[in-house]
Image (cartoon, rainbow over the protein chains, first blue to last red):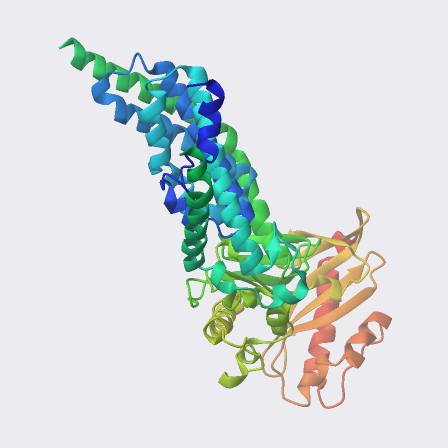
Length: 200
Length: 298
């Protein structure tokens, strides 16, 4: 497979959230606003990228029997790092994301890439793969966050863009939990209709 | 055997490296985290009361607000009443009369769990600024006999805020002990330095001692009279305040009147007709105290 494809396939064609349907928990829970969704996406991308790199570097040294505990150790180390850093420099974002930052540890997207890709491929390839999947996750969350924030609160990144009148009485439903399911369903349908046909 | 050893060794090494890395990251971010937390809290309490400094009394819950001379100007407390979706973090400022100076309710990003679009309207000024200048009994919804308008379709959240604030005031009101404001008797002074605990202070202005302030007692007609006096270095009285007295109502209590107390400043204080015992006791006592503290006036 061409190196370029390693990066791009994670963005849309094999998008973790919208195509593979993994990592849904944070995607549904923290996509209420663009800021939260983007922050969550970047945090997960950071962990995914660095755990991919570390695991790829050590892949020949890790005995097969203990590979999962080693993966978890490495992943949780990076999650703890991002947890501390976010707490120190982005306290508002940290409070908004709450429990979903520590929960990146058990995000199956990250463990999945470690097991399915980084453990078997070179460092360069693992970087491309981690970046592609991570940014695909960020993209999916940000799009969901944008749709939900614009319709549900009348704002984008906190700025009123649909006029003050709309901000007074927005579609509150979109910001509530059911809105997340609706948005992810519609996005999934769109992806199925347009992207999958192209690839066939 | 080799493979078992290998497994154990790999896990051990990975675990050790991870913990070392984490301890470095922790030692680097820990002071920053504490600082950010403190700033966030301070930012919150500064929004509800105007004061120079805050003294933490109960960690994360109660602060005393003091001005630059260290005189109490109010308190700030935090309460977390149960709302519709979870606890509502509220910060309230109280002035010395027990009236609310400001209310701050955490936003959704800071952990408010009320319904978006409905319950979260409690954070908007239209609602929370209604509390300003109210005291505890008034800080209730109109339907509960108070003066606060509830938010339409968010009565539970609105009522929770009112009850939380009311309960908080009742709990912490006793921290508003009437302060002995030394500037009442020495308006020129900017700072006071304690010489004898709760009894005698130097009055300072631009680092110069310009006089003393003391608290004294004397036996009145019925009970003890506690008073505070400011005296300049020229031995002139700058002000007298009665801190405590329970003299005969309407007669002996005349010693609290400004007309009488102001005469001390001119050095022409004389006994009040009808309250001779109380007023004479005060005049004599002040004279005696000034003689006693004379050496501090040099």
